[in-house]
Image 1 (cartoon, each protein chain N blue to C red):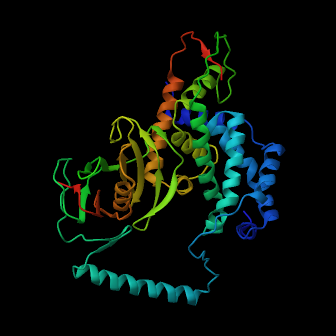
Image 2: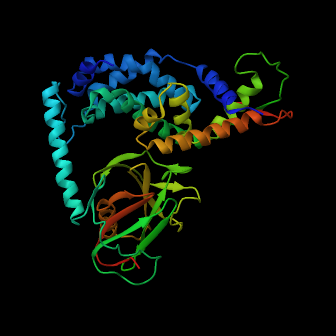
Image 3: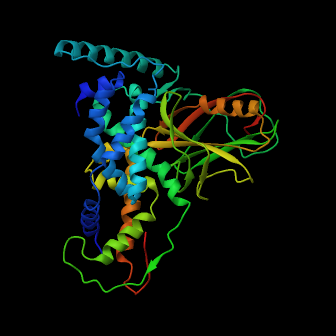
Amino acid sequence: METDRDTTRIVRSWLEEGRTTLPDRVLDAVLDRVPATPQRRPWWPVWRTPPMNTSAKLAIGMAAVAVVAVVGIGVLSGRGAVGPGGTVPASSPLPKLGMPGHTASPAGMYGSQLDPGGRTRMHNVVETWTEIEFAALEDCFAAGEWSEPVPVTIGGLDALSVEPYRGDPSVPLRREPQATTAAYALPVGDRMLCAYLSWGPATTPTELDAARAVIRSIQAQPVGRAIRFVFTTEAGWDTG
Amino acid sequence: MDHDLVIRAQNGDEQAFASLAVAVGDRLHAVAHRILRDIDLAEDATQQALLAIWRDLPQLRDPARFEAWSYRLLVRACYAEGRRTRRWTPTLRLLPSDEPADGDALGSVHDRDQLERGFRRLSIDHRAVVVLHHYLDLSIDEVAESLGVPAGTVRSRLHHAMRGLRAALDADLRPAAREVV
């Protein structure tokens, strides 16, 4: 029976074995392709912090305290909470999401609060089926097959997206034949809000655009151990 | 890492990028080889990662984070190569041989076989965490930054992976055919 310490020692020793040098031909192949590979320029200005003296740092620190104080006063006066994912109305009760049914809700803002391991979902009842499932999981891309993760920004959060995603049965997914699922992982504090958008071959581009707009509208923040999030939908979604 | 070199490469200086690629190439390749356990796949993943670094370098906001960022691109490339390797499965088998334990930290050929097999059963996510933490000696927070996931997720994956490897090492020594890969 190996102890944890034995296992760590053996694994570290094992990892030391193996190749450590990149062959020149691989490096040459990369450098040959560089001139023909355009760089992707960001649409946002790339900023860098210049070196600062102590006075400048102090001034910026005081300004930050002032901003925090103003925001804090705003929150305490009931104007809403500011979380890492943007502004989420925390003082008003959130409309509850329900399991899929056949009642289209009006356009508007909806939300939910998920405990760790919790999940809820909704679907579009107007067109062909499209479904979004939300879950608070430890790992949105658990065992299964997925495409290369792509960085996306949702509600001010640096998230990851994979499409298509075929997860294992422990991950909540629509399992219709020929269904496609795009999975989104949003880090909220030290937790993860997962959104799984599934659609079928007959789903129209317009419907899919509307579904993606729901994902893009997500604003989330941690509340204790739970994740509170809101999103905006057009009419036609069953939100219970 | 030379920040000036990173900034020059961000601005399209191909010579600066060549110097960067030389500086990080060996390490990226070593990590890819340990994650993928296959020399050809590791070379392909390293090549893809280096090209992705060149392509996306202008989007890196903080040159000081170049190294962590480059590991993230490498792990993504490993995902892609890992999917390729899933499409085939080695079928050749060798009869077991009686290899004596050699007394080093790794113990025996049996341990190596068991580790290799246990490691290959892990997902790329879990392998990446093990390699970044136990091979590169990155802290949990540094691994989290490199992979773009919360530190809690890194701890969980590391725990799961090490538990799997320990179970592989604890597997009994009954004579059995060994996979050749």
